[in-house]
Structures are given as C-alpha cells and as structure tokens.
Length: 132
Image 1 (tube, rainbow, N blue to C red):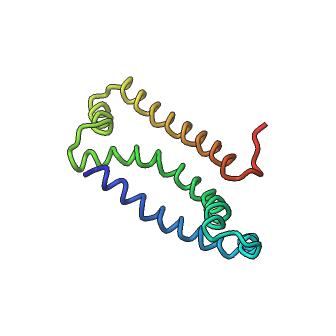
Image 2 (cartoon, helix red, strand yellow):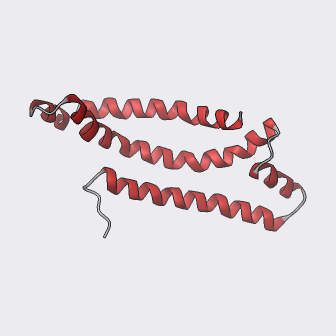
Image 3 (spheres, helix red, strand yellow):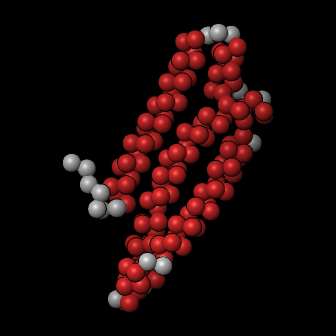
C-alpha cells in the first residue's frame, strides 16, 4: 500500500507534465516540417516529439525520485510498515547518531546518483548536448 500511495502521488503530476510538454512540442515548426517531408506519424512522434518533450520530464523525474524515498519515511509511519523510514524515526528517538548519519548519507547519495543519471540521459535525448 505505501508504494501505491507514493507512486500515485508522483504519477498524477508527472502525467500532467508529460501531456503539457508533448502538446508544446507538437506545435513546433520542425514537427510540421517532418510531417511535410513525408515521415510517418509514428516516426515523427517517436523521433521528434517524444525525444524533445522528454527533456523537461526527465528533469522533473530526477527531482521527484529522491522525494519518493524521503516521502517513504512519512508513509511508513502512517501505514506502520517496517523500513528505512521506521529505522530513521526510531534512531532519532533513541539518539543513535551513526544510524541517522548513515541514512542521511544514503539519501544524499540517491540525489547525487539520480542527478548523474539525468545528466547522462540529457546527452542521449538531445544530441546537441555533448560532454567533453
């Protein structure tokens, strides 16, 4: 149940954001040019619309994924599910500083790793972005 709560909470805003990004990209000139050159609708959507619409979506996902893990702390307490959130709360209440520091370090590593993955995805989605 907690996974469903966290997923639905993030999924609703992500769906609206994807829809908005795709609608913005579909109206651009290069999409009309691709259609007028005779490309099929499927190729136009996949190669031109989706790849360019995913750039801001990837940014949003990168910011939301660490939030899902930290949101699990509250959700685990509400549903009484044992996990890293319960461990963090019990460690805080017991003044167990090394465990609190370790869990905080894990959460910070998640932020760094997902930002690195997003930077690599930018290079794959948009060929104009290069890393030298």
